[in-house]
Image (cartoon, rainbow, N blue to C red; front, top):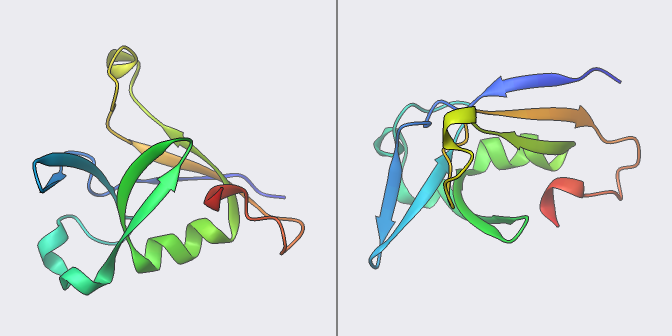
Length: 99
């Protein structure tokens, strides 16, 4: 298995929806405006809520994932996701990123 660390292109972007700011994760887009609103979906991971573009979500679904943050943000309740460490799933029935 090959570990990969993929940078989040939306590290400095949050989306405000109904008064709540959500962290955004995308491997493909630098800003949410680059694709239609329908291209984004809500993603729940480790009791946190994110907005993720559907193509990135498809990649996440094929891997066991760990969201990586900056050391300087460690005290934050919602630190920016700098990148995602991914390992391919050995068993297709194992959806470790989607729990």
